[in-house]
Amino acid sequence: MGLAASQARLLTITARKADCEFQSMKLSHEKIALSRDMERISDEYQNAMNQTKLIYDYYGTGTSDMSLTYGLLMTPSVYNDYYPKLLTDKSNRVVLSGIYASAAKAAGIPAEGYNGTPSSEVRNSFVEALRDLGVISASTAANIESVSYNNAIGLGATFSATVATTDITAEDFMNLVKQQCKDTTDYGIVSQFDNHGTCAYPQETLISSSNSEWNFRLSVGNGHDNGDNRVTTLNLYDLLKNDPNKQYTLSFRTGEGATIPAGESAFLQQWVVGTENSPSFLNWMVDQFSSIFGGVAENDLALQYAYNQVYDLLYPNEEIQDMAGKLPNNYNDCDEEDRGGMTARITDGGDLKNYEQSINLVSTKVYHNYDDDDSSVARNTAIDYIGSTYTGCGSGSTSAWDGGGGRRQGLALNLSHITEIFMTAFVEYLRGIDTSQYSYEIGEYSKASLYKINEHGDDIFKIKAPTDVTDGTDNLLAGFYDALFNRICVSGWTENDNIESVEYMQELMKSGAVYISSINNDGNYYQSSYSTDTYISEVADLEGVAQAEAKYNAAKAKIEHKENTIDMKMKNLDTEISSLTTEYDAVKGVISKTIEKSFKRYDA
Image 1 (tube, rainbow, N blue to C red):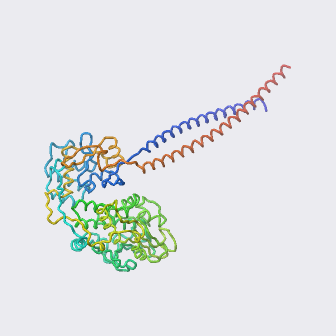
Image 2: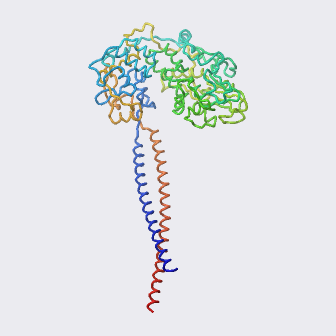
Image 3: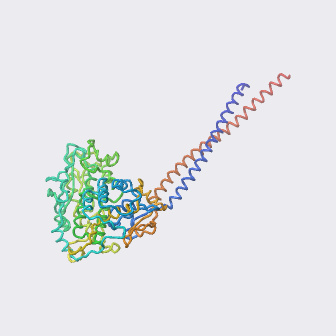
């Protein structure tokens, strides 16, 4: 190698070696940064391991998983004994969410409050603002305004706690149901069916084939052969009798060649469960029971328990509840004409190509036969199950969009069983949950242990006595909102737009930024820490810990992958630097010898 070439090669090696050493140093700094990241996520994980959440344990069983929310505290129910449980700041001002604060502003209530309570006109303005903002219904607002304003409740006065009761037998109860309870026609549910049982919603937007018929059907029969015995109304008496030859089933079917997207499954289930003020089957049933048993504290708690049990049975997890929450308020609001548009709307555009996956997202499936030609099989099989039964898809296919060569598809739910479960849960609460002999779960009906009212005609229940005397403050809803109004006016209020966030609200409570104010036996509100409230418990947030662990493992794996990649690169650079060093020394030696030979030649 010539001298010039050797010198050029030496410069190249020197430059490359310097670049490798720079890259190695850079990777070393990146690894240090990853170590800091690992330390940070480890600290976050350790903190999350001690994460807790607040639950509302009204029944005192120690097994409640009811999350403590702003809505639970500020909505009248048996859970707060129809008194608002107020969040208050260090100045004892009531903490209001944005919507409640808007109602206070609309009524002209100053943030600092008044020296006392204002006129009934201001109270009515507050109630009307709550109505206009959608907090309460128009009928609730009218009911509250029809009751004289109680300007002392929550300020030393309470509701009347004395209710005269009388005993009735289960047979008496059934007679009262037959005489007094209203059928679903008077409740507005029948408006969803015509005389042929055809769904009144726009069929072209709710099925994937606009050329096919889609029917809701309310039918009665001997369970295994409901046939075309369609009805358009329900009454509680027949449902409670649970006659095996007179089973009531709600179902729907597609026309030939059509399919059942997740949307239709969700709509049927919502028709049964509904929302707080909707004319659903479950709400209708609660109202009918309340018309006889309501007004007795223990009965009211038992009815709420029964409602919860049926609700949890049909909406067993948050995912199904979330799906129901994405349905439009009005079924006629659907305007998608694309195939499966309703499914996409419910799942935020999710691409659900699998029929079974689709219905599992929004329903409590217990039986399916995807290869059956006849959609009536689902309806006639429903008597054997607690939960929904499905048939259809055709040709052995499970594709949600396969019409199945003209075959029909169907979904069904036995309403007689649902009514029997409600009655069982009601009795279960009155008899004692801890000693319950009853069981009811999604699955085979034959495996359930249910209360058969026709077999217990002598059982005793308590109802309000006809001679019950009240002091004018027995309207629980009016009393609830009067107490809330009075506390806002006397103590003042402050707005917090984020208070409805469960996590945010609970952190404020844990940090002592806000307190719980509850009514005492003397009729006054007292402020205290959540830890002293008998209904509130702080428990380990197992779900939060699990989420934190999953997040930690994912971040750790990502960092370790980056570290391994850096280690490999650094190892390669070290190898290259070593090789370059060896070559550098060799080329340098060649140059030295060449120069030495040149000097010797010219010296000679």
